[in-house]
Length: 229
Ligand code: 13P
Image 1 (cartoon, helix red, strand yellow):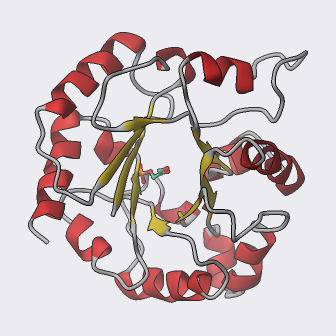
Image 2 (cartoon, protein in one colour):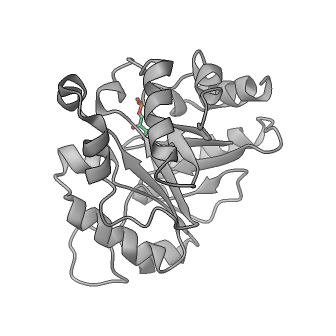
Image 3 (spheres, protein in one colour):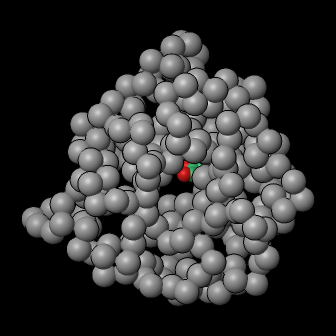
């Protein structure tokens, strides 16, 4: 099982260090893999129970790409794990499927573990054609890639406190499992109160957590809950 903390634009270098130090004290069950995705400025070579990853990266080694980081910057800290296609990058920063799939290809060729995010908007859910929308977000993505982890994060459930219903998650993960043999995660208002039920959903290999992961106490609480399963 996988439990991942996406800090988004939260935490500094100093507080990330404190967070990871406290995380060490939190007892992790065997078989649970932890990941932490701090902001770029807090990337470093930490000694941690969690694998440290980047929330995004441009698909080039280095070059004239103002405001981006690439392979060279990640390699400095031994980072080989990335989130790509997060809905905030797709919808707030306007990243296209074409751009995301190019980044995917670049980091796949370099053996990165890629947390690849997809998820429908409320509008699409209400219209009902969720599957073809999700499929369009998988265009150009090698679904057999051994470093791939797919995170299903419905946009309407992110940062809203509104978790998708278990049946809704189960249905989508069931569909995704017909497309890829790789692990499937759920993300969207996961918290200590619902993490157990989410982890029990068929085809669910873990959770990608935003808000409830930002306090280390709350992230540890989720680890505790998973331990009880
Ligand atoms: P929240 O847990 O804040 O809903 O965010 C989910 C998410 O976007 C993780 O990548």
